[in-house]
Length: 412
Image (tube, rainbow, N blue to C red):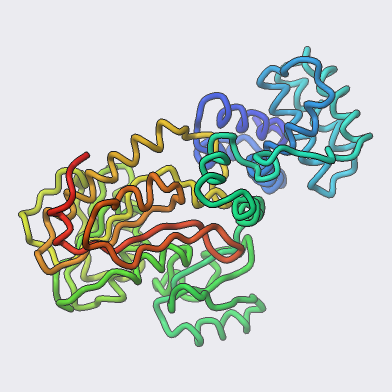
């Protein structure tokens, strides 16, 4: 049965906030129940609320005498977002949201209607707490403030509130590919962090770009591309291991950077293997083989690999502009646990490296616990770089580690 975009959005938000379900997973399930003309609205509402939850909550909570139940809370976030950030007439934002609530919890409709009408008749709060202005949970804001300073956090969090442009890595001559875009009437600009990077407008349809079926490009933020570009390979025909490789963008960039190398893409999650193989096939990565294995216990001999790219599992705090649900899926304990696992992965990566070889450790997080604290104490670390989220790039961290640093590193 078809349902409206607002009802589906309320249910999606409840799944994220109450059950820690990833937004893209719950949206994918919801699409089959939403009319095609409502799907754009559904995405806008869900991702808009996820990006701006804290200022929205501060806005409507002024008029609540008690904490709303989960359905009412999701509806109030949804309605307030429409009133403050969308070109939806106030009466429609209120009435359509209330109509959606009636289908889920009729008793809550009157309460939601009353609060949203007060929001519609008011101006946004003049003052917000620092974490509300940054649109961050208190614990993330506090960590980043202590590490980087409050002004810096407010500055780069501005980028996290906006949908990001599309960024691709182009494997054909970049200027010629961009010339084809101009002929199609599509604006583009080169990325500054990678010679392969091209930035395109938000919402550009990927499959309509020139050479998609021919494997001329892959979607990948230029911050991630910069991490791949930092990897050094002394022997051009050597063996490179790409750990935690799915969905394969970094593997493909390695393949095109080092066409004479032998590359092994390692992925633990069996459900991601088909997509990894499919992407590498489309991108014509003929020098890549794929294996399913755990990066903590690699099926490789000591000192057998010429270079390793470890894009480790992390809290994804650097890519909140693309995946704003990440703010609600992890807590401080998760960051500590991930940091411990990352250290173990680094140690295992160093085990398989040849004595003269290098490892690039990378994460799409900017938490210090997952960044420099992972490689702290290593004598052979170079090229350590943290990129904060910005208009044209995600937040990212990478560091190059020489094999000799394993002597100063333990499985902590």
